[in-house]
Structures are given as C-alpha cells and as structure tokens.
Image (cartoon, rainbow, N blue to C red; front, side):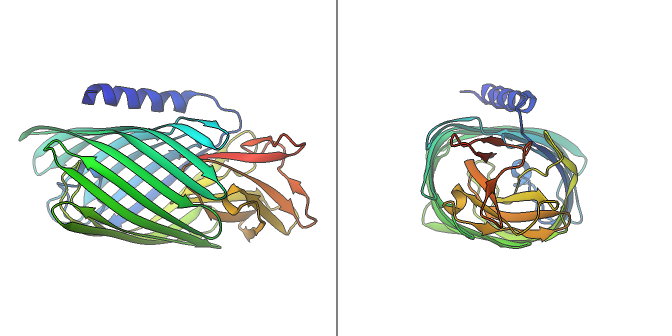
Length: 362
C-alpha cells in the first residue's frame, strides 16, 4: 500500500469514528502546556533544543485528536504546528477483540528561513484477548512517513510485527512488549521491553526499559510522575532516553519535559455525570459527590474485587491502570449494593438484571 493510500485510509477511518454518534460516549477537551526537550515524532530528527508546546486534545472512548504549536527556547530547532488523530475501531467476540490501530498526522515547520511540511500514518491490524486480569495483543502492519523541505523530499516506511502482554488488575500494571521492525534498507530491528505504571490517590507514576538489537544492543528507558491538582488539573514531569528511531531516523537522545494539563468544561455526554477519562495509561473514574459514601469500584481491571474511591473536588474519584481495549466496571455502595447511575456514560445491561459501565480505551 502506498503512503498516499495509507494516509487516506487512516484519515477516513478516524473521521468516520469522530463523526459517528455513539450513545453514552463522552467527549473531553484538554489543554496541555509543557516545556523541555519537546520532541515531536515527525520532526524529532531536526529538533535538538529546549522548547515550549501548547497542545489542545479531544478524547472520546473510540477516537482522539490533537492540535499543537511549538517554539524553541534556544538552539536551531524549528517552530512547528501539527494536527493529528487516532482511532481504534474494534469488534469484540466474548473475550476476543479484533480490529486495527489507526493514526495520522500532518505538520508545518519553519527552520532558519526555510519552511517545510510532512505527515505520518500507521495502519496496524490487531487481535487481542483479555481473561482473568491478563491482556494479550498481537499486531502487524505498516507505518509511513513523508517530509518535504528545501533539500528535497523524504518518504520512508517500515513494517512492524509486535506482541504485548499486560496484567491489568491491582494498583500496579506490568507489561512486556516485543516487536520486529523491517526498514527499507533491508535490516530487521528487534525490540524487547518492560513497562510498569502505578497510581495511589492523586499520584501516578510510570517507567519503562528496553533494548533494541541492531548490530549489538542499544537501550532506551523512561520515567514519569503526575499529580492530580484538583478535579481537572494535572502537573507532570517525565524524562526519556530514546534509541535510534527506525521510522523518523532521529538519533539517540535523552530528553525531559515538565507540564500542566487541565480539562476544559464538563465532559459532554448524555448527562452531567462526569465520564471516565484516560490519562497516561490510567483510567480516571468519577462519580458526583451527591452519592453518599463510602463508594467502591469493581471491574475487570480488579478481577471484580472492590477498590475504594476517594473524595476529590466535587466528586468521588479512582484512577486505575488500563490497557487499550474494552473494559467493564460497576459502582458498589457502603451497603454492598451494586449500581450504575441512570444516564452514566457507557451504562449497559449486564444481562443479569443490573448494569455495568463499558469503556473502550483507545
């Protein structure tokens, strides 16, 4: 498949998911402002300086999009703007999930007195299964990248095969990832890595470590932490060591960023009840304060054991680590009664006379 056809396919699928009305789905707008290494995928090979980025994001359970603008604080890195979207159209058959991961973005940049443009797209069919708190996913497909500037035009593609195993129960979420990437030069790059995320109250943390096997070994790693500042804000910091990127040809580099994110307005859904939201691999579950406590959550991510919610701002809240795909949960009150408020986004029948909340994590 050509780069142009891949881009059209991914953009069309993302646009269709964005436009399709899905009952009970919430939409959340978020603004991020951060500074540091500020690497952006398509321009990571050209950026080597401190910068500041303003980012506007839209998230729904099936689709997300962003618009970004950035400027360097020193050095010779470019000023750039970008638009992008990603989607995960899937179908579930019991524990089995079949679908694809789609993403596309385009960007404009100015470096010195020259201007340029570029785009990237990926189309990765996938199949996954979730059982007993474990999630296993296999994917394979193609990633494309194009860049045009005064020096000429670069187009590049890679083929990727990958597997992921993740445990999604409890306060810690360990994951293992394997992938093989074939580049146009004919070489195959192999990667093996592990990740761990955890959350406790308003604090969240994550880290990863991995090795690329290309003419020897080359390591990459990351560490990050976030604090929920109120019901809608989040302060975060991260540092990352990245290896040579096989798609964008960015050199190995260590970067850091610090930032602040704030959710805008209410999450729009069928009611004023706050909808679940995904942040940095964590599912934030909220319930209005009018519900008398204590309140618990039980779901597939906890093997249906009760996890207590805490009070934050004007709501009950709980953050749990999740993996992409479908997950279900329900609320439990202090008397042991299971419930989901009428009109809660994602509320569906559990086929046993009660209700659960279905969330599709992108």
